Image (tube, rainbow over all chains, first blue to last red; front, side, top):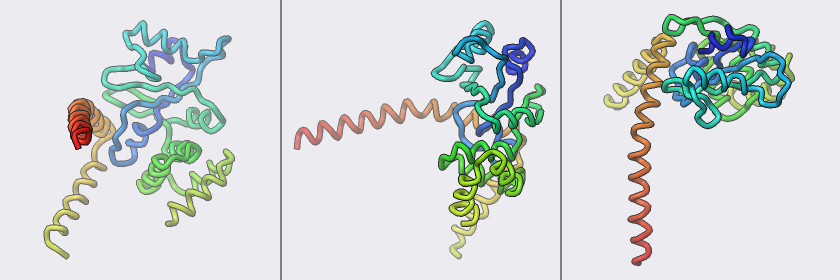
Length: 163
Length: 63
């Protein structure tokens, strides 16, 4: 469905992020939804995701709360909202899921987005990604520096990574 | 170290490693299965805690 959305021009690009993306590198983690970062063509209305919802409804996928239910998974679309998420989308990798190519946010960007979000579970995600070796401290620190997250990185580093 | 504890730690380490060794697809399937199981169990759990609350509150009314 994600590739179809792109082919139809409803979205310019997409990449899976959040817990499902994290699991490419770490142990499985319990999650209840699939998060997808999207870039959208310029729109003249405020409801940025209207086209996505309409397309999905035509395919038989309907809204469930803030998500769209696709099979067993509520899929939550999040338009890119800053330079970091735009870059994460740009540098996403293509992986295969059940024979279908799927774009997925890279480990270092997953960690940097988690750093920006900053909840306890996001800090756990950063630790898991660093521990897996998929993202290095230097890479995350560099992203943090370039995207104005130096303080968040310093807090994380002193409280958790060096603890 | 207590033999039972040592065995449990060993099993935990093996379990952790086996989870890590799954492919991405397998991990997603595993999480989907856990999610389905939780969805199945939660209504029963909620019913059970509602029953407990009702019993507790009617008990405190009596006392």
